[in-house]
Amino acid sequence: MRTFIYSCIFYFSSIIATGQNMVWQIPVDHKDIQLRLPQSVVLGQLEADIPSDGKVNVRFNGYCTNSVGDGITLGANNIPDWDVNDGNVSSRVKDSLYKTNTFSHSRTFTVQKGKSTYYAVGQNWVGQNGDGIATIKGQLTVEFVPDSQDNSIFTNDGMIVYPLVLNSELALLDSVSITTSVKGKVMVVFDGAANSDSLISLATNSIAEWPETNENTDLRFFNHSYYTRSFINTRVYSVDPGTHTFYAMGKKIQGNMTSSNNAVYASLNAHFIADNDAEIMIDNISFDEKNMVEDEKITELRMIQIDAPADGKAVVYLTGIGEMDMDDDLILDVFDTDTITNIGDGVFVQPSSQYDHSVPFSRTRIFDVKKGTNTFYAFAKYNNGDNGTGSGNVKGQLIAKFVEEPGVMSSIRNTDVFRNHILLYPNPTTGLLFGKSETESLGLATEITIFDSQGKRLSFTQIHDFNQFSTDLSHFPDGVYYFCVRNSHGIANYKIVKGH
Image (cartoon, rainbow, N blue to C red; front, side, top):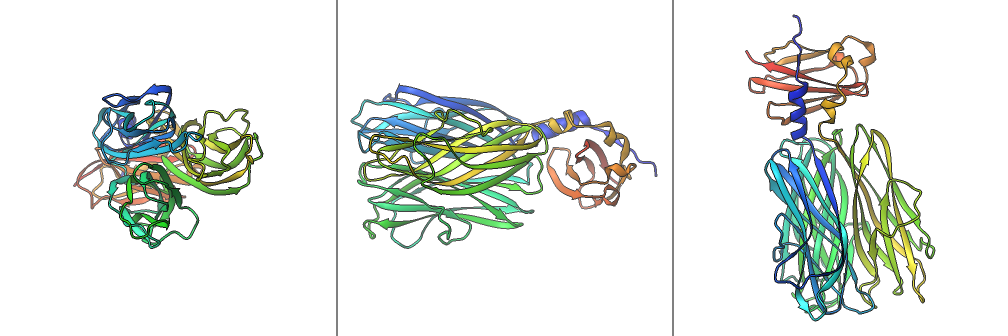
């Protein structure tokens, strides 16, 4: 039977545009802004053109400098305001010598196709014994995942856990679950704010047990009625097909082990990314460096590489804990080059008081990337005070997430080689469909993705000989289906009619 191949470049381009992940970011940079107002102050707003129904994860992270006595509330939202106890964070200064706090607030929203605006907001709402003025520097980042993406899934839950008894035994605070049909990785972000009376530890894990590795976040408190601390804990887990549950947990290291006067206001977000998805991929590396920085010297912590199959974006996260002498401060940042002379625009970390020199940090940057190997570097620099040591410990995660440029598959990389020499037959078909390559040069690693007429991804296959490809559509309803065939030579899209 002669094969009928229907070209669907233009229509398929619209499917790809609505069926791909997308990312956006804006800087948030305010010096000496007055936040003691009756309403929230919009620190940054980002309008995203959402191509289809799905979910967005919105993160506002950075650092805030303010005066003793103020409680500066900070948060990310889909309205120009913050919501009470939804995981929003705050900067409360305990000591006039140490007036900078780091923060991270993440939320996940269900969205519909169309333009949506997301906000970074702040307000001096409680604790108004200072001057109401703050300096805030950070990023507002928005990541979109369409409902049609089975290989990329967002899930989340916001938690308000109060009253809470914390002791030396593990307390499970919350959990989220994801069901996957393929292998992949899950990035879990647990961030928000907490109150307690002494020293507590917070963590995530893929089982309801305390993690064996040293990837927990310790927070020290001094006065529960006054002092709140922001935190972030980020980990990446490898998963097999199935249902996976991820837990947020905590325990108390010091303090009153019977008191219920503890609280956690936070978000637990999980993002699954399939290993076999070429349009979005993730990699991570852990680090734990001790006494690693010479005074005033920019030091490379770690590097990470993404082998991008196409042009796109890379979202790079640098999160962890910085420990330093009480007279020092620390600056951390990520770059796409290893030759830098200035690290001053990164996240600024200093002790929270004269009693505590361990501080969580979070920095997010988005880079344009080209097809091929792209390398990203994490750097740190200690600024030595008069009595500081200029050295300390930094532990955490460097995570790079690649997102392919929307529309690049059909609009840029369709080639005559594929359109002329790859066949799918019979078309129309009652169920069985076969592949045929007319050139030996196409017998290399090839990806085949099937979409329905709405752009929903139905299956993804990797093969090494196109002539051996076959699939059975008999369990699908009669209708039109779109096949995307891609390898290192290019890409071709085909319209297949299934019916009797």
